[in-house]
Length: 399
Image (cartoon, rainbow, N blue to C red; front, side, top):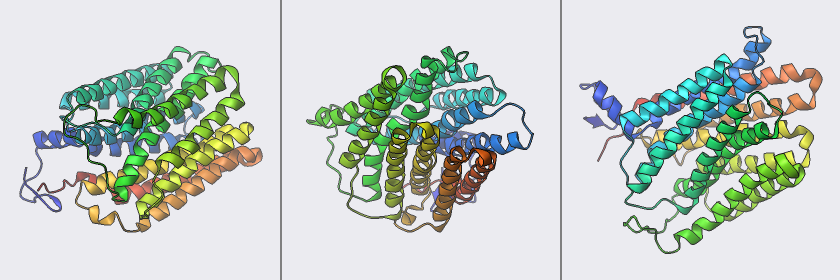
């Protein structure tokens, strides 16, 4: 396919085969826009409910759409694009992309309709298939993945286990198994891949020198030693969920907060400043702060977790997606610049987080704060979408 610096040439529109090929090589072009739409649907459920447009309380549908729809789509898009490139493995096939995409949409559709058990089953199968696809690419690799990516594998395992437990115990939502499944899916599934990818990604944002990686697929000397610390951190975080649910809630929360702080302090580079790198650092600090507040004030645990979700996970997803979309659309020159639209979008995300946190502190004004949080999030996402998503359709010129 002929491309210029702005993407496809005007004399050649992409045909069905070429579009499919691009989506296989760079799945983010399909998953990022769809994930954004699923997230907007999930957040819109709150104002729709309080306006009387939907009758079912949207708590479960909202949380599932945000994790299994919004976050999962960005995880699929990023790992599906970066994973094969980092390891010099073949890109995903059209059949694999179609299966993952279909199962994820089915899960979202069932959650919107209130059939949460079927939705969780679909998502568990989706994650299993995605993990199988990643495993096949790992076996076909020519290069080794970064040691921190062991947390990506643990995150996928956490998501599979969490969705399975939720489906199994759907009828008993206050049971320990359901609470454990909720923690593994809503927290572990997103947190662990973010902790695994963030140090690698921040180093690239700062253009820090990277150690030479041998070409052979065999693990280089010292790889397992470097992977041991993130692996132990990930297992400790997963163990903290078990401890919190079944034995010592306070101890489990403090262990999780402490592990996250120690891991970020040890793994995240502090030297170097760029706009996107500072955004990534801010989001990681927000994640650590949210878990610390949840440990300090367990009565406001849900509110504190929204610090993690909104200005942590969400802000990281938007930051990483800007780097991916701009880098693959010929806009890499913008990486070192301040992006005014993202500053405005980030400000609205911060307001959304404050409103959602305040909702639990002021019960008399809870509805007002929930709706305000949803509106602020939707405004932030719309601004981000207008500036970023159109570039998804632009293919970078191949040298």
